[in-house]
Length: 617
Image 1 (cartoon, helix red, strand yellow):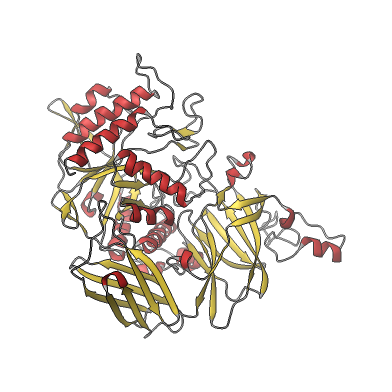
Image 2 (image 1 turned 60 degrees about the vertical axis):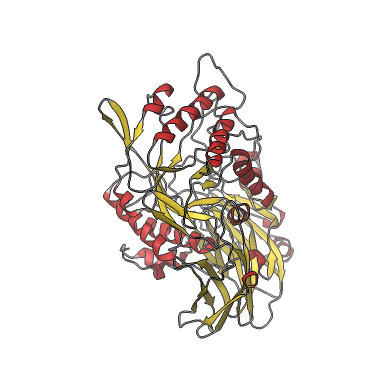
């Protein structure tokens, strides 16, 4: 969330603060297709562990020679002032190709958490009537952005996009942009300091200079409504937004919706759905070109139309029950030294492994909003998606600032991806302990989801409770948040954590619920290539294989289960996991090794899903 909220966060935060109060900077939907220039590529970088570039050692403003963001050429200055003392030289600092997490710049940065400065130059020349924005798809964790030595803005949150207007900061010709990236986790941040995944500090997703008209289409949400009509909500940004004519065209359906923006710059349009409309589904992921026009601006997207609802214990896609054959994914974990460099080829490889390798129709994108590249490919490839924000473990549920951050991240995530037909579930939390502050916090997030998007379902990964009933173990959900959710979800690791022997797992029963239930996580670690069938030792491939067989037996008997997303497709880096033989800084619950080797449990799950698919589930 952009620090335009500073005034709000400084005051007492009531849960009743409306969504309008947490509006972030422009969404700039489909920024990759807008006029401007890609700023990916060569940037210089400078490590700053003591934050010297922000403040002096008495915490006074940083002095001359320390401010890495100053608009100055060190060479030019030193020629004019030979005795000038500078503690940095961004123009002659090491260079890296961005986007990329900084652990790939230099092996010494593997566990660095702190401030890093990035800088590059680019040419620009605005025409009269144009505006300019810097849009970053993700910077982890906080970002301070400067253009030509002047502050453009700040942002907190490592996985959602943000845009900063720089119209008045640009010069005709060469311009300097500097980004101070601080990966330090905060006790009242989202996520909290302790997680089970790699921090990956840096500018991890593409960045772009976007050029727009004075008034432009900021967001266009086009969807199939619950009543069967097509609807569009078009948000304009600019002084002349109110009353502007807006037109939405879907050429493939010979459909045009038109109207005017209201005083708030928002146009609400609708039309009857044409009889020839093909609904999006995993079996037929039909996408339509959509063109949105308002004044001088023209925005395009590819959108699928479908409906989602819950009826009784079923999840209905286009009015028909669907069983979610899924898998959890972290963002790209390719090779022995991944750097969270998200590419279309990499994202396609992961999703193809899930869809074609495992026979999946569903992916859980854990534990934060994944790249726009991934969600667009899910649309194209026909995979339903669970998308979540990193409200995870020990988030500070009593903090008004934390609630504001979470609400902003959720709103930014939903606004970014509301046009993605693949997204079926918005998740508001993962494995959070029950308590009154937490319940109120998450209830507010559920309310926000329903206010922002009534075409999808809301869920959260909850914890389970174990009881003994008639001498047998029974699992149930004892979480008051369940009443607020459309779809229930639980992470269960019987047979891996705890004392259950694997042979006893199938006998564990699950109490029936009045809503559909997803087993949102289950899994066991296995080091690829390590096996000891005789001892059935944990971390062996045979143990993981049998664990999947027994857990799937348990799941098949659970009366309310309508989806599975085991943990996880690929091994991923986690500083928590430090066993010197089996883990070495990796969570080994993946069905695929970092180098792409499938473990035997992969085929167990693929066969199970193949059989479900053959039965029409």
